[in-house]
Length: 346
Ligand SMILES: NC(=O)C1=CN([C@@H]2O[C@H](COP(=O)(O)OP(=O)(O)OC[C@H]3O[C@@H](n4cnc5c(N)ncnc54)[C@H](OP(=O)(O)O)[C@@H]3O)[C@@H](O)[C@H]2O)C=CC1
Ligand SMILES: CC(=O)N[C@@H](CCC(=O)OP(=O)(O)O)C(=O)O
Image (cartoon, rainbow, N blue to C red; front, side, top):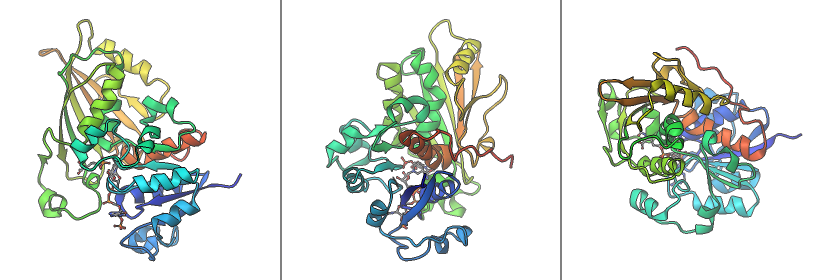
């Protein structure tokens, strides 16, 4: 069988470039086309010299990517994906959006948190939102996939067993998360300037981050009732990784051992989600450059709270790796194809 032709729109951004890197190691696809606005006409290896001699494809415009490929990944700032998705869907191609344009089911949430509005509502109706471990049955045959946000992935994988079991006390959830600087993308901003973020550490968008409604959407669906949470992200001066530390109160009768058993069963067959043994603490260094999510569970006997720590690589499980997992599912390939790299120790 010929390899499937895939293309990346926005290949010069951090998430797009990471996707190209991973797709080059996928046995069933060929990266046929890549696009950029700022670097159109240049070889991608001129922008990222680590690709020299490995992948010297000339960057085109987005229309060429759609026309030449069967699977198209969008890796653009939000607000730009609708016309591209329309062209893909009308051409019978699969579109996977790594941005936020198709993630929120309620348009009012999108308007409130992102601004703008939905122009092509039919696309939003057909979009399938997928964290594969939670939504995989919806993906086979999908034509438009909304790849989740990076913080949302770490948080929802960390909490899904509890919400599915409906044992978290309402309004008790507080999420304290940290992300490496690649999460902010390649564009220059003051807060990711070396002298601003090196030797510095602070929260940002306190209780006002755009991933909040997306987390509430996923957890409410699992819970079968609305979930409200407090989310505070922090910028960590490392390149990659997210650590989400989550504090909550459980219904009567649940202790750490019982919760541990619940997680063990929930994730028993999952390739990419690992529950750490009792006493171990999840650490982003153990998942970097991989598609794994590590979860550790801790109880605070004095307050009765459960503390869940969930860590992923924001560029892989939080973006490009998860997008490939979704592509594999949509195309009927083995879900882990191209994603089985072992995390390096340092
Ligand atoms: N970084 C991360 O950890 C994650 C990112 N994402 C999402 O992936 C998407 C890309 O993010 P990221 O790679 O971090 O961002 P970057 O800023 O690093 O890259 C943005 C990309 O979009 C292109 N672009 C920018 N403006 C336009 C425009 N007006 N028209 C067409 N292309 C444009 C740029 O192309 P060029 O400059 O070459 O013209 C570049 O390729 C975003 O939606 C982000 O939310 C999702 C999960 C995690
Ligand atoms: C450190 C940092 O700035 N992280 C980004 C992560 C968001 C992201 O990339 O996700 P989307 O796909 O939803 O844009 C942020 O907080 O906006």
